[in-house]
Image (tube, helix red, strand yellow):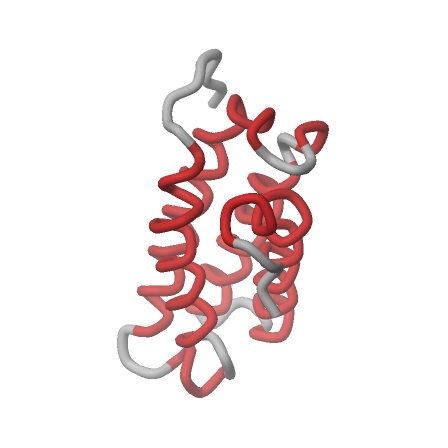
Length: 123
């Protein structure tokens, strides 16, 4: 799926929506026991799906980021995490792989956008 025009402004997404999604994903995915508790896995998977959609929609806005040459990097990282989280939630994946994929998403956010939209890079 490819948009050929700017669909949204990045700043409101990066200051409001993305932190809310990623904060909840990190909280619910801090360890395997928490991830697999009740509806937590579904919430993480749902949030990662929304993050993929945001990353895809924002590819035309990369000129607003710190690394405009990396327009596909966040979408690829978010999609990889979404796939691994789905597999883990279904009992067919490795939680450690899903956690590593989430850390890749966070690192990508830090290097491409976070300092521009949210101040210092997240730790």
